[in-house]
Amino acid sequence: MILCGVDEAGKGAVLGPLVVAGVACRRKRDLSDLGVKDSKALSPARREVLAGEIRASFPVEVLQISPGEIDARGMTMNALMARSHARVISALHPAIAVVDACDVVASRYGAMVSGHLDNPCRIVSRHHADRHHPAVSAASIVAKVERDHAIGVLKVEYGEIGSGYPSDPGTIRFLEGYIRQHGHPPPMARRSWETIRTLVTQAEQSSLLDFPGGDP
Image (cartoon, rainbow, N blue to C red; front, side, top):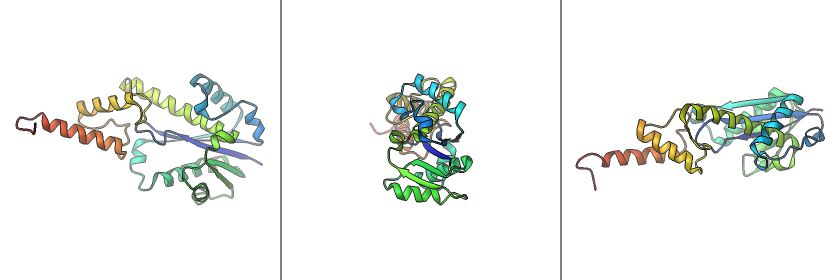
């Protein structure tokens, strides 16, 4: 029997891709023996090492969803996540898939994922599954490393952009400067995010005040 774990990185980011990863194995302990855990509990260097070991020994599937795809999704983020989790699961063909629930009701999210599958697979949907299921921990590591690599590529092109999350002051500073200079968000920004809409509105208001006769 094959089981897999699925997790993502960058769901709440305002810059860069959303990365979904799945890792398959035959026994839970196959992955727990590597020392996998929630990617947030590991240093970047340790994540890199573990991601390499996971890829070398287990089937892995990775899906990157661009900011443009997210903006044009035509559905809720939870619906997009369920469809994306299902795509990764379908590529790995497991009998059981453990997913990190993206809905406040874990069972409802599991049903959403199941609805996108063409082949029989038991979906186990759990909150914080990356802390408790080795396969999901492994998937969280792969997804995080892939997302970090993508952000690294963007930093080469754009300079310091921070982590890409709206809670990061460095990311907000970059966005404010870019929008002020160019008059629009950068291509790797999720324009449908409230953070971007707010920054664009603020820049437009500031620009109006620069004109003679503008409100004091």
